[in-house]
Length: 455
Image (cartoon, rainbow, N blue to C red; front, side, top):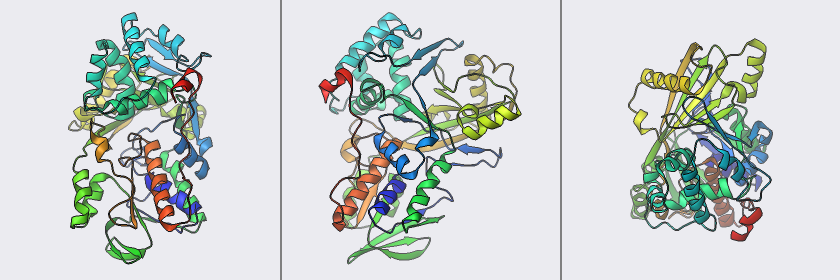
């Protein structure tokens, strides 16, 4: 997505873009493909966006797919046994817009809610600096109960940041809370694509082609070297000359591309500070409808989210309506280190056991097929202190630029962060060329209500 965003922005600015993609389809970690074991089109992992993702929404508008997102105002928290608590906005001004439903939520007791409210009041005015403290330690220092941590803070932040709270920096966590939970009702709306991810992002490739660019699939960039007024790039053993190079690759892949020179050593040292965290998606197909929810947060178990794909994906919803009431669900486990070494059979058995605790139709349903997709290096770990190592788009080589959700975007490893990185790289290229002075980045979503006091 970082490469696509950079390519679309530069194509719009008049550059002739050549985009190299090592896979046979677009989207990178946000992609879909026909799974060989099931014959089904599956996303490599469920991706969602929020109303505060202004640059991602700008990218969708540019690609013409903004109508492929279904928006939800409510968030359902399910306890084992099926009891539901719904968090939804009200007419109250931000940051109080979710207060009525929050206070009614059965999954938290009065002490939990009081502790959470105190912590939110501390986070509302500004984002704390990174002092090396983990967010779990920050929560304990601010008097959070064990249940508040487990059912509120962990539920929101592990899914958003893909890391355990004891490995998460305070500014990352605070930003997620302020942007999505406090800033405004519009900021916290959740959007889910209604088409497979590769279908969503293939239109960005069309956008680039329509402006004179080209897309080359199964083409891996292996190395680069700068020459006067150009960059020579080697892909699949062939060297080609370009005016500029944007490396939109994971940090570990970039490390393998860097030349063995003194100028590369500072960047190589910074890359060595990064580590990754995994995400696991569990796809289950049942012979009947197991729940009437489109999505839900699952509490106190290994699985954290359920997405009812046969209700969300438009083509599947139509098919289910015409041919029966089967359910296709995806269950997501963020920061899934405990599952990396487990077999598919073990993970599916765990998922079935937990699904039967949450969904009334699951015990009587027959599992028709299943698959497990592990993204072992899904995101970089947002641990305390990592921000100082996130590089800006410019490099030691004047015509070589960086993009990726791990670069210095001001956002964590999200689709929004990836698009911001692409726009920032495009800005840097255009400024170097002297063709554009304004930024491709669009402004953050404006705060509403009382949050206007904390601009």
